[in-house]
View (spheres, rainbow, N blue to C red):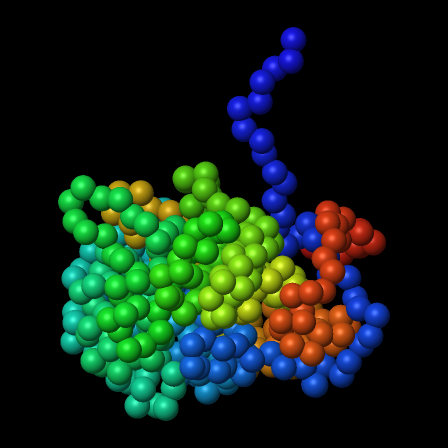
Length: 381
């Protein structure tokens, strides 16, 4: 008797399960164009620093902008709840591991101060940097006018999972089409991992989409909720939505793969999978300029009822300059990320990131371990 199938499961892939196939033609890495375009903004490097308190503060946002990238300031974190965020960050870092979640919940329970939102944005703009800020959907309608008035250049609306349609009994949900029409600045929305959700979000008029649910080094959403799609598959599916939307509208909306990166090769694989840019958290938390002082924690870690994240020690391995442009002082691929992208594009014969989207990728579960027995043995000793 044939047993009926209730669900058909498809295979999904993460960074360690795939490999990039080099091209038939190689080009000089310095001749590659790696610009990221979001609305009318052009960034020389396709790398965004995540809106996490251990990664981005005012100084880091300025430093990142001056180096050609973009850093997003979290407007619901310690930077806008406290006049003295450095002291609060030190308290988080010094908390015993068994107490850190409760400490974070208490720290993040303090009210957000609107005057600090204005002050942080104006400090970034005063330094001549591009200012991008992040809010959750629940606070978007309240904070968006203030963000615009303070002079921010770009608004990110982020939650664990964001869709164009939200059902609620108690209030009218956030309508992205109305938000985009009402604001004079670009709106980037995340996070999503599926073709349909991404396509529906793009049809609302947003300027960019963040791709990824739960892959971050400090995130436990996948363990707590069981939700997520490995990043290579999620990126491929959302890239298909971007291309479909471009065919139907003539408007190109970049997708930014957010989370799960450990080394330069992962960034390159994300681009081949279809990403226009990447958003990094734990890698930048290792920068000496990062406000987390060698530690990193997720945005959902302080949730009052269901925390999804953990504080991790990543160490301070190098400067932001080293992480982006080298020279690398480590051999694990976590530094000179821009060099890695350009080199991979060169050996693939891709002069632009859009040409990188057309490069062949193969399923290669042995790519991390093949011929690496000595490295594996020594790393485990």
